[in-house]
Image (cartoon, rainbow, N blue to C red; front, side, top):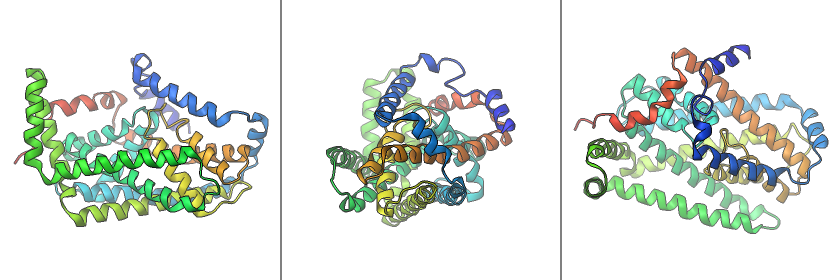
Length: 356
């Protein structure tokens, strides 16, 4: 642990190093997190919560962490598959960028780790950041669709369906299906898409920014290549299902550390709802947006608020800590600094267009 603390303070993250405290995005995310935490912890007797957390059987977390890293490997393979038409990269070379990126998601707000892993891949494999970000966006959309599938599959098991859950399904369906349709249309009509975004960029963007933005858009379009193939779409969807089923298995293992039992479908529902909620802005590490919805789902299934809160907080820590520590280690091994990550977004605007 001292080793990782040394890394953390040697490479202070963006929200610690220079200005994040003054940015409206940080305060927006922090405010949303506070609201969700206030909802989650309302009415709880905190000494009872602490006793529940202390008495948990933490040995059950070990198999959960092992299963979780199988899910991380599946994520690495999925990204390798999405990028193969841009540049074939061995899976073993993509492990470190993915782990560093997920660490970045855990310590930066607004899922900045997604740009960070694209930046690391560019540094190591010379793949355009914009093209990588396009494939990552495809991942996120398929993750959202799988979360919706989990929710829909588990809904029949809910005793009394609350109105907020119905609204979540409706809003998320519109968001993710709409985004998928938009990107598929872009992918299968790249020339039409190029005419459209070129028109808008040339008409509404200042002259000095036009060429960089056109380069980014062209690279992004290249990254959507996998959506032109029905086989690729099916493969990405199936892989995404495997990833999230493995993560739900971790939820199941951690459940055994506490004195309650719900069905695997209930944990699928919890997994789906919390990960849909984490698409909202929040403080780094999805504080609040993960915990509040997770606790509410368990309460729907009759789990006491104290146990539901203790379980959700421990599960959140068990999801956050291992990948974050491993990301710190890979970051040190790659001799990367936090300052490089703060420049990652800027690199997308100046990178060259892809060769045709």
